[in-house]
Image (cartoon, rainbow, N blue to C red; front, side, top):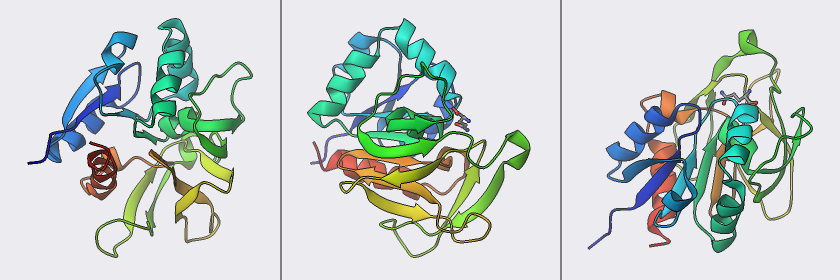
Length: 203
Ligand SMILES: NC(=O)CC[C@H](N)C(=O)O
């Protein structure tokens, strides 16, 4: 019998509801969380898209970083989309100087790498490890890209078309997963399914 994973969605700011809907469609229990006490019984966590400076400041004022880092160090699976990717980066470029991250993925992420709001775009992205061979339709909204990764990081997706060909937009390191784009905003559930499978493997 398989247990139903309890996956928190960090609910400080951002598109919490869209992630919760995607997870519920995959038979996970999605729970919005914003307090330290709420992290204890989670099997996994999603950090949504939104605005990472605001999210980071709120996480500081709610005193969440030590608990988040401790759960990451214990191996709890975490998936971050867009601002969530920034939160999982060990190092960020173009962030506010005081912008703290949870870290855990040995990567350098460049915020707003594709330009400003007007430069938001959509692209089909070949993504390793998803069910089927079809690329995933990525929505990029003031998105970051991954500038460079360390040896332990697996690159799952790169953009395939110019002017951004080969830019890294999805990575995994151990139980941490991050995408520059927002699979929670499109109906294709394969990225969330990939994450829920990662979570189930830890139960
Ligand atoms: N759509 C997003 O999550 C955008 C991320 C945002 N530009 C940031 O730096 O936090």
